[in-house]
View 1 (tube, rainbow, N blue to C red):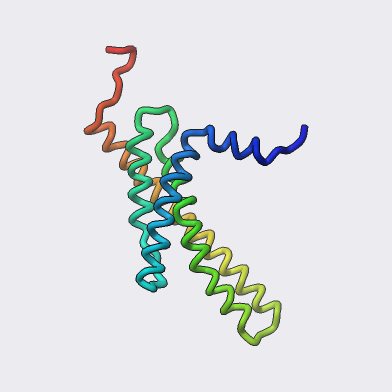
View 2: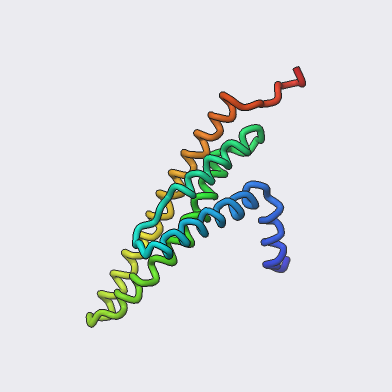
Length: 149
């Protein structure tokens, strides 16, 4: 059995959850990153990622897929690109200091851990927003009745 990267990408894009996560998360990442670059701010706004997670919860409310799965994946995609983009300057600063190499390596490990925490928190908040969107769709939306009643 050989590994084909194109087959793996094709299988990933055949999954509706990942397809939505890549589109909605990618769009929200673009909004977050463009806002940060236009304002020159070092803080990242999480609202577009939360809105994309909420939308995922609403859209996937009638499917067998859990809304939190959709929201979590949207959060990972939506937060990873802006956080990684902002961390480039951090790594430049760390490795530009005149310090022992091992100390720079320790700082880089802590920075990578912080990046993981930031992306994880964004993903959890987006998953929560998706569960709220799922609840809203169930409460106010139109769900099909079981057995066609």
